Image (cartoon, rainbow, N blue to C red; front, side):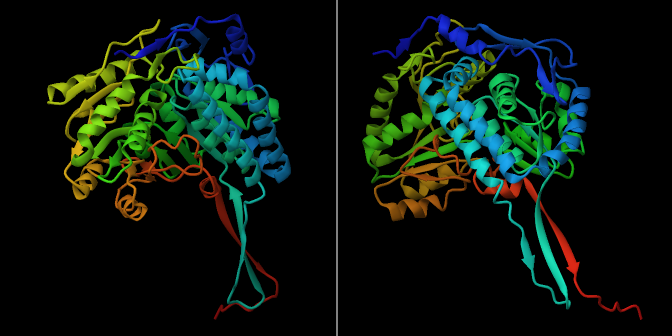
Length: 503
């Protein structure tokens, strides 16, 4: 039995949809759309078809400096706008996403390789982020604190931090950018955004167009697309931004923390999420949850299940059912609604997944399901299922692709030990019919997020994200954004003259 493969011929309407917001041959830097001043050309490709989607000259370090300089000045006027005015821009952005849903979705699918189902979820949570951000403008509350000095009043004002540097990834490009971009702007900040070079449009330029249509003033948002090797230090080391929001690898996050200086850092980094199946779990449901959590978005999510740890009493039955379910997933063209597993983002990513699988087999893991890559660009890898211990590369390293390792546990204590046997601590899950047992287990997992009887990927829950250990600092989304993108200023008011102890 083989995995079903889909192929859909590109239609004229699909090309029309991509043309709606474009062309994307320039970027908004310091209040005007123009080519960057960097060397070479940044070429954007569809990972399924291999077709070129956009081409632009990348940004330079001088462009970053200009963007920061303009952002610092533009932010003052933007912060002085009434809360209702800033909220209205967020509401209009959400309306543009809804009204032009098919155009936005076509871009996300074409550029990131996201399937129809995945992109529908991504746009829904992106729109929700802008709606939530609109409400934040009226919730930036301060405080009045008591004083021990007669006639004195202490006031604490909540103010925007000023300028935010935002560096976003390619796996959920429009959402993972928006979850910091929307609240930062709504709270009165300016933003200089560097999207991934794999998704410069949906991670940055498309959002800039949407916000331009929504009425965001010029200069409040700049997008600098280009290689990190050329503009990364200029972005991170500058003293202009007071907050730096980054989603990406742990290695890059550590490098940023060493260069950033005195800034507030929001870092969501690598993951190695365990999905634990205890001996009393609902086996069919746990299998379904694990298959979804392993292969959603072709396994290219930092919160994806990287290991499935199964109690010995269920292990063999689980493996058999899991392999059969994974084998039946539809692989192929992400624009076909039947497809569940689409392409990985690039040749480099494909080679990385294959390397980890090969090294794991060499280390003793058994490959129970696999296959060669398919598709016009050759980047679409079918599900790979391995059985091995916690030390094989596909279990000990972040895979970021459609490959999962099933690990046997000798009871609950051993399962917990295996789950925590990683330097990462982003997401996790545990399956059991006993909710009290599951909650007690969840509270002992060393991770920022743990889901009971669910997948580590909560694809429709955008309330909070963040990790422990080497998976990052800070929290993204929800009420945490109010704290991350604002600062407090203490202002004391002496109403009555008072004597000073000068002698």
